[in-house]
Length: 512
Image (cartoon, rainbow, N blue to C red; front, side):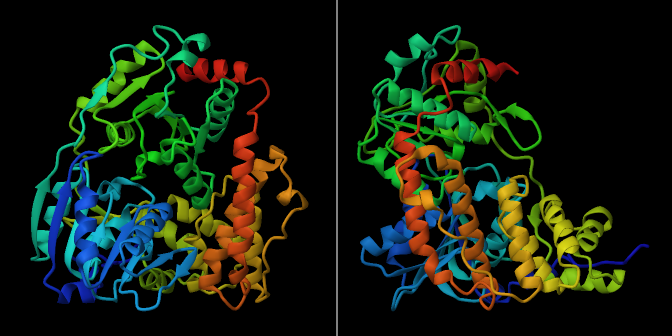
């Protein structure tokens, strides 16, 4: 069956942001590498504005900017998928970019990390912000990787723009000799580590193993990786910021705008697993991570290194190559109106069928936009159809957009429990606090991380279905207890078995 489908005409998507179309918006690009002060410039304008919004790539960054504005005397709300912290009289808001309110006009909007337009899962949120940020002045910060399609979009809207190119405030130097020389030798690593070093790994296990070993060598270590809640990542960042921790061991999460006093970035690996296979780090990743070295105002120079000499070649190549993205069209996400229209045409209430048809058979002839990939949503949609077949399409779509990892069994099981509650119109209470939560035994670290993720899902759903997720107000206290446990566990965990052998394994497995 072929359906004539004109969801994305040249004006239908842009006109859906009716408030932005009424404003004569002016866009000011602040573009440059990491440590060039581009976001700082935009935030200065945001602080001076009568009203404004900061659109963050991470909840942690939204929290950081909110605190910064409040400290400068500007009342500011915090709005993310998991929380609403509203200040009396506030006319500024810091939010995650997915939570942008396109229907509330402000004087200034700041869109951070614009190069995230390239992200296959989240890029559509940056497109929506670029097209729909409801401000007369829009600051766009990030690298130069996606400037061309952004300008083409702005010009198509008959809106104005200017570009300020910024250079790094401190030089970034790739050291000539790797930390361990030609071949990895654990004995060479210890004396080469220095206060202010950030060692970058690409898995939770590698971060924990390296952190444990460095502690055994007498270093105070801060650890940051994706499974940690923003609250814990914030605490670990602060330990490194204040000098309590000598060394930071982190995943590439630090590449997303976190302001840390890093003197030298050391890549423990030049490969990462992207969900499908292990691949070499690309230009954007290397530049975003390496660029965190040499914090302006603290260090005069930033340094970059690796563990073995032959890995220097790839890092050098990525740092010196033009990183302009091969992005001609900006991704847009399917909306509920499109879903309802297709479901009616297909005579189905199965949202997985609708999304699959939309991805496989709908073709958009549009010079500026294209449909964002739907693989992740389709995977969740299949589960939703199976476990809640009679649920409305609107409610199904909410669960399709829920922030979970289906490949983690613990998260998937809790997701299905929440889905059942809504499907059967029953109240879902918070997960019970485990007996070990107030203990000082680090062996439950992974369980605590998973419990924190389930709390995040509950908090997210409590704003979508408050009639079923009724105890969202109790989340902050339980979250604090979990965060304190994780922070304590990170300080005392001993890694996985013999960390000497584990580190040897980490280093040798990089080739395979």
